[in-house]
Length: 430
Ligand code: IMP
View (tube, helix red, strand yellow):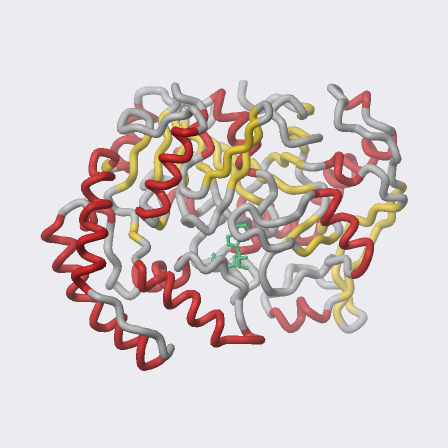
């Protein structure tokens, strides 16, 4: 059984949680390596729907170990609430099945304040963030004024670190953003309590994971967001502030790339994006709305309507190259039932020239013209199909075209939100 990284191959919301939940059955440990509670992974089990923000999707399988790596940013207040909600849904996150890296950075109240104040100030130039303080916490990490989980659980360190950084952050909040200053004592009292409640989860994650690998255990590295939201390779500046690609798995856990065997990319059978930024295959008007309604495309974290578009094989090929995606899991194929014609974008035209690589310049990306391959749609409801041969010929041709145009073989196709609505085309975990 390989150590596998699972990433979103588009702009996030591809259905990673659902796929990780399924394949987590086959691994021993599931680890989140980047992002924070900007993520929202929805998993449907029977009639029940569980939305996870920090916790790895493996937490729904009690015999598995779930880990939050050092690359993740943790909002302790939200995490504690998530743990309580999980418990009331009949699951458990306890000190035996959940470990949190003592090196993970902590989202503090001023991070959220700064995120929201900037977004409302920026007006037209805003990023469309989730407002969870993600950019500011990663900024503080790089600026060496962050507070780590190891500080949160130690009152003396928390006090010293908070004193060091709060004055400067308050000055930025008030003088630059026109906000109100935050009070040291209030934050300290609140956060020291969170630290007490979470202390038992603290762990040297790199040592734990490396030892587990040496003992023959397998790891699933769970990415959040998607390849095109990666801080380096995404559509910057309309990206998140971490390495959401497969490379982030090493940085965010302390497990070296030599120990990772394969990368599974998740993509919808079409494309969606939340927030601002270029989206070459976006469908406007009634057709876009039809796709949004058919796919229930509203954000799991913020409830925002997602922008919808055709499958972009050119962008996916780029994501595959950067991240070494060796297999693709295609989700929500059933949503395309009833569309008379379905487009697949196979290239970009810019000023009449066909581009040979994915542009790094957003101005170019905004002005490109997608080159589409028009395919016949199908009318049948395919959500009950159990095998590839039960799909209409047009749906099978569509999948073949996705493989051909992205250059990545398909591992699995999902046809609905519940665990059993899935067809496996290949076996990669033998
Ligand atoms: P941030 O991560 O909250 O700073 O938001 C930056 C960009 O990433 C925005 O366009 C968000 O909509 C997008 N984003 C962040 N997390 C997710 C996610 O889990 N799914 C999809 N988009 C996301």
